[in-house]
Image (cartoon, rainbow, N blue to C red; front, side, top):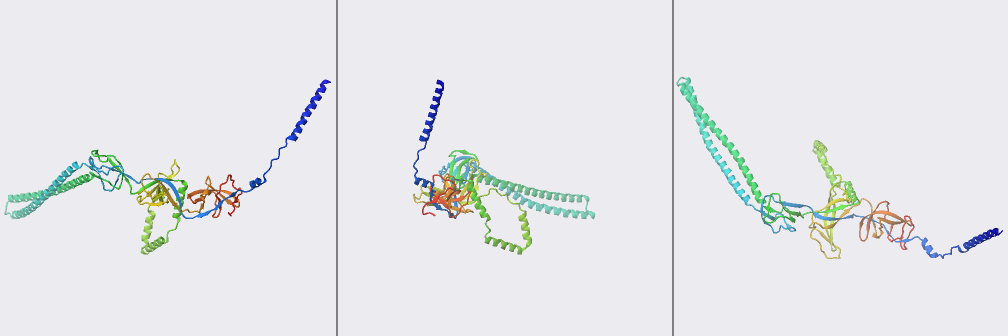
Amino acid sequence: MGGVTRILLNLIGSVGILGLGVFGLLFFGKAPEVPVDESALAARSQAPAVETAEVTAFSGPFQVQVDGEASTWRVLTVSAEVGGRIESKSAGCRSGLFVNAGDVLFEIDRRNYELDEQRLIARLAQAQEELNSIDVELGNGEALLKLAGEENELQKAHLARVKTLFQRQATSETELDNAARQELTSRNALQMQENQQGSLRQSRRTKEAGLKLVEAELERCRLDLERCTVKAPIAGRIVQDTREDGDFVKAGDALVQLSDGSRMEVRCSLRGEEVSWIWRQQQRQRSQPVPTSQQQDSAAAAVSAGSGGAADVSSAGSAVASSPEPPLDPLGTPDVPCEVVFEFEGTETVWEGRVSRYEGTGLDRATRTFPCRVVVERPAEPRVATDGRGGTVAPPALLSGMFVTVRIPIEAPVQLYRLPPESLRPGGTIWLVREGRLQVVQVSLLQMTEGEAVVHPVDQQFAVGDRVVISPLAAIQDGMQVQLVEGQR
């Protein structure tokens, strides 16, 4: 009986505890009401206001700007052309000094070459005297040859008379043999004299060849004497000098190095998109029609050729058709005009140049750019442009080692647009507002100045008159609703 009572009491206690828990949950578990700011809720649901600017068209060439380094067009090594000891070195033949073409740099000992010149002059005189002697012998031989000929004629006549007498039996056979022997002796003397004259003529030709050889050696010796005076072949600055007074040099030993300052080059590298604009411009130029004057000249030439003779035209055409075509350079030569700019203390010094060629085989594997060379034909003729912030301080010429900016004007074959610089966003994007919604557009920046940015659309096209956002936004989403600031439409 007591056990049942205990069970009932436990059951009643458990139900009571459960009831108290339910009551507490219903009474204390309700969340308190939080006051709501109706004005803030309305502001959150309203579209953000943005400031915009109008997209305008860009006309005219834009400039591709790359950094580069000026370098010397060529460096010549002046070497000794003869061997000997250096007797004197010019005071102006020092590293860093400028020399003009023809300035004397070194004097090499010339005494050996002067002795060789005297020896060859003596040999030349000897050869000339030998020729004179042969001429005298030839003159004497001609007189003897004439006498021998007359003697032979007399002996021939005497032999003929003796033969006639012998036929008449008016003389003996002994007389006939003596006359024949005398005629043979005179003929032999004549032949020997002719042979002697021939030998003298051949000896004279040999002496003439020897005389020419001596003259050539003498000319070479005199040339070596001139080469003992080493002169600057070009006007330029001495980069390095390695020889001093008293040094012995051999033919071919380097003396100085000269930097040619008549022309300069700028080494720079163009990115792929920059080179693409150059190619587009070249394709546009090649696609332009031939000028009317050239067409008229071609037509006039064709008419004159037709009136002059069709055979000549056909033969010329066949010759042109059969001539082999020169191999084409697949990369091509840019030959694009540009400006080379060096800025110093607020002053811009500008030189006219041309992108002359691509350097190397094409694309650089390390930088993934196209190395180029810009040629400046007149490095000593700059023009100076100052921005007013400093004095007009400009270098007199383009010097090797200058870090410069290369500006390449490009005539774009497509439409470009002008935007405020503050409209550009990270990642190369801009925010356009169309029908009250924000649209993210990818662009390519071509040129940036203080007042404008020139861009080209990449993935989506836009037009002149579109509105671009210039004010900042905390968070954006493509297609989100925006509203223009009051006063803008």
